Length: 127
Image (cartoon, rainbow, N blue to C red; front, side):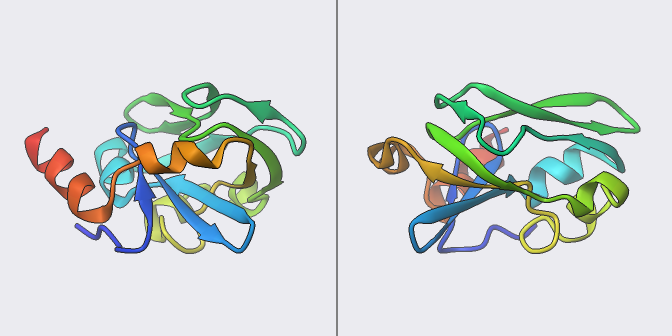
């Protein structure tokens, strides 16, 4: 199971990648593996403002529907519109083509509360 270094992770299996002054967000390989074949992704609207741990959408698989939780307080600046027609990208490429949203952080200090790749690997090993 891939846990790329250089990303930050939440306990809700969401990854965050800093890209200059913005952050790309998706679900981890572990999360998509647990969910199974993803058939629908519901994402927020551009401009939505959320606090850390607020629900920002959901992922529906053949097994279940799982809520998505904001890893940090944020404003949505872009959504991955490809997922509307190709939700399977989350399964096929969770860290590249299957990203969910791009955001601006409204409280960057919250990034320090997220897990490093090593700590996230330890977290999923405990589950």
